Image (cartoon, rainbow, N blue to C red; front, side):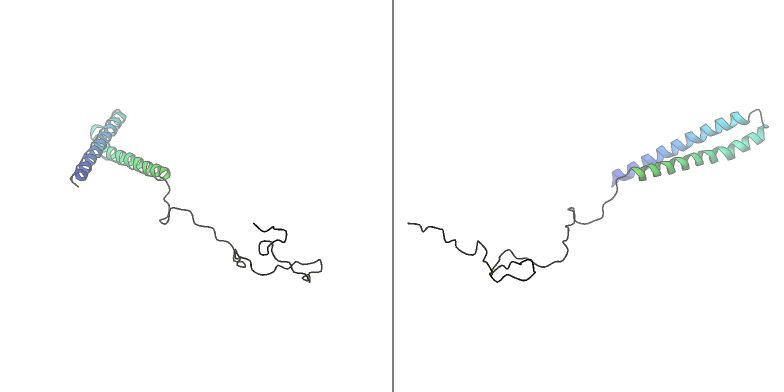
Length: 133
């Protein structure tokens, strides 16, 4: 907690120094610009009013541009929830079971079940199987 306060004070001091430097730079530029164009008292008044305004506008523009860049470059947040992708749901259909008991019916071209129903191959023993000794 103490280290956080130290960083906040350091960053605040650096920002104030940067603003003072920017203010001085605008004051010098404006003083030089108005030197031959206005009288002494008007030049002082213009520099005193315009230099802080220009410095503040520059700081605001920098903050807005930085904020826009950070917002555009930050990774998109994922919604909270499980990390694995959601499972796909199959459409509701007839339930099937792995076991088949009973006889299968086959249909003939007329759409009616054939009279001879056959059992599944795995359900009935084959007659050609030889008994073991």
